[in-house]
Image (cartoon, rainbow, N blue to C red; front, side):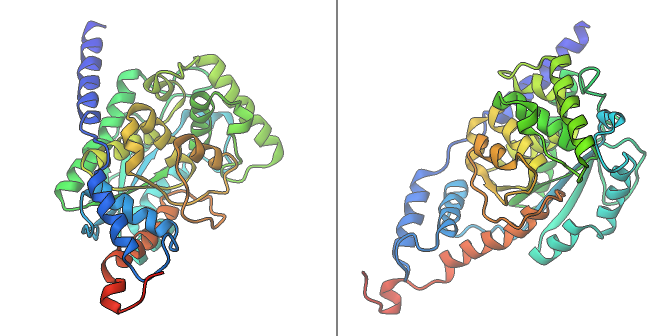
Length: 360
């Protein structure tokens, strides 16, 4: 017991050290970006969110024209014990099967990442299967979480360790030259855990926080909401303590993605947030590290019922809405195109003076 407590304190200290590295945005660089945008041949603000992104990128990196060409979508994969309650339309065996699909390059996120010039990096942080592949980042902490309807998903120590896994993955990728990150997920049952996290941290009801995930019918949807309510009542997570919430009703991949977000922010890199599960991780990251929100770019509005509410809780405005609800990092991959568009506006568009155009 004493050894476990000492280990938890050590892990917590490491997490706090990394959180302390996340600084506010560079205000001077943002002012320079805004001034440059005002000098371009267009009415002020007429490119909307593209201008917002350009200014944000300047604040994140401290540069008007940062090189963000090396992009990685980090797909965290883990299983969920709550699947034994029948909350998903798909069996738990799909998680390891899809991980192998990612590694073979055949999933939707692989297709969209190739189009965007991004790399997919898949992390096994808690898949309930023995997986081996040259491209797999193996960081397994458990063979899936425990059933949150019966008790905590994981120990507090494991929850902190899972966040640190995400931070360390980003650290290695940053050393490899990546300068922009995106979040992706794989884990049958993870919308159940994400809805529980949202309900607790927002103070809302499980019913308002729950969607149909993989497309479950009305009967299973009602059952899913009841399971989430039971999980919250059974575990009594403390909404003022993000790690407590994560350990009691969260998921290993959700924790890992929170770490990816904090790690990207600590390295002054933008991190593109995908859909519902990624946004639950972003909400946890924001609760742990308020400044990390400024490094997030909300990619899209998912068709998962409560995603809009989740984005509002974080303070993110999605760039696109294509009625998607796949996860994996697919919406984030598409958002890369808009981020590149914002960068090209900054670097390629003529100014009033260079084009000889009269100002308004």
